Length: 349
Image (cartoon, rainbow, N blue to C red; front, side, top):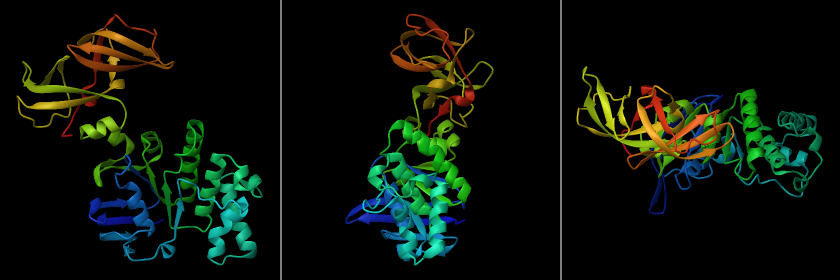
């Protein structure tokens, strides 16, 4: 298992910088995600790790060894592309064996490794088919088998599920995690899909404009965003302007259009400070004894949950109710409560 270290990596295309002085570390055997929108630099970083393009500055290390100038074919990285990139004239077996053929692996060893890789992705029975005889999900499994058959040190995945429909994406998520766990291989996975990152990753780096916004475990990022951008990027939330005040007993509290709220993340912010809060839609509980009372102007029933929109003197508050006892609460006044630990005080945009 390989530890990947990026030290002060920069990349420009002509006069345009796309990655700015970026440093990060991928732990051995981890499933590491680079998450962000189009143009944030995530695929450029993946291609620099693979050796397909050279950084403008900085260093890339595998287990402490500088591989920045090492050609791609000597880095022993397996890569799965967004487009699958299967040879249409070859069978599944020969597509998977391509990396072995290039490395001169022949005979029984070639056959054994191909069989092992196909078994790993559960495609043994399709070995003699051509790519055009496979579904999108099956083609993706073949591409994954081809990437692991030569036993790479590192597995790189470039938006591997983006061409699949929703049901297949969900199925393949579980398969990719299973395969990476069984192999114990260091994996770097690029995606714009927040659900993929939250459900699969050990560690996530969120990127914007070639820089790291924040990094951590999926739960750390979802429950503790530091900026408005990240809070909004990862799921649904409410942004609530607030002023820091002191309660009658001297505790710091937050005055908002909803009334007075508390947060466990106020820190040492001074009384009178203007702050912006993020409260997830599901953080609110409908509670007859709740301190916040607001009229519901609209409800949307979605089976296992309902989404309510409430009016707080012009501020629209969205509340997600799990297992709703009624489908529509429009016209009702709802009383709400929220755990202070789920009232996040943001540091910036």
